[in-house]
Image 1 (spheres, rainbow, N blue to C red):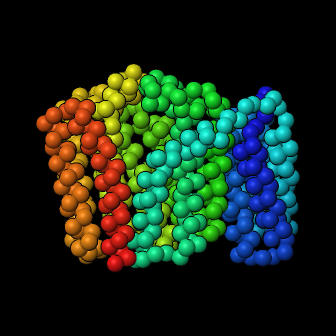
Image 2 (spheres, rainbow, N blue to C red):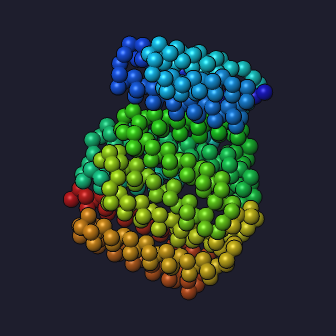
Image 3 (spheres, rainbow, N blue to C red):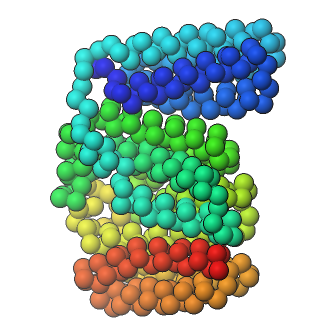
Length: 393
């Protein structure tokens, strides 16, 4: 059997450290601090269990026992039994840590491949929308420490989801030509088990960081976005329906909510506008890309809209969603949530977006699709920057 990689060992050690702190804080009666420490121990224990179930079954009994005993400790009211169950959980996770050192070694891959697994270009846009959402929520620049912690946690969540996406999409990536066939997992440079462990580790540490340093709502939102992208979009929708990106776009719309919640600790109506803007932007953005590489999607049997319904219908849908998008971007001003700086920017940027969409409907060439695709990236970035500038001004 293969030996777990360094990422899963780190997760196991984090679970052990969290369990130890929970036991010590519970035995010394630290109250609220004990509950916080116990809560942040859960994500590494869950990640260890998932990694064991999917890739390293010999770890499964110990990791499941650790999680069940830890949950039992949280459920009982007797102080003595509470501490005893937590101590047994610690013993189980320490045993799992020892097991991670056994087995046949597997090549880990280069650090560049692990950077690639996080999809840094996609992450940069997600972080920008999250950062701007935080500035808008704070109505100015948020405290530096909170901002750094929130963006680091969001980056870990995005990177973890992307790494897990590489694992689930490896079969598709091998069939989609030069754009994806050289990705680390698809090309065999990183073993699927290593990429899985890496994605689970980043996801777990994202929750720990956000929950302990920022606030629980921010951590929960980042986790929901992560799970929705991996399980709902990648595992199910992408392979089953041409409307995959319409529903799946909800995952990419979560980062602004993460930023808003990090700044405010809540979600209110303006936060919903941020979500809806990215949600409505996603279909025309990805369908423009799909028009460029529809042959690749067809080869991989992914039912993207151009493959299933053709170029003309895709272009028509792009125009309809672009109209909806521009309308949604005007709602914050209509409800007096933003000022003239944002309004002028939204009108100018949206007019250009809609113009390119209409031009694509008239001429569904690769050139027109490429123009819209690349402009859509600039559009979303500039729109959120305008919103942030308006909040600061």
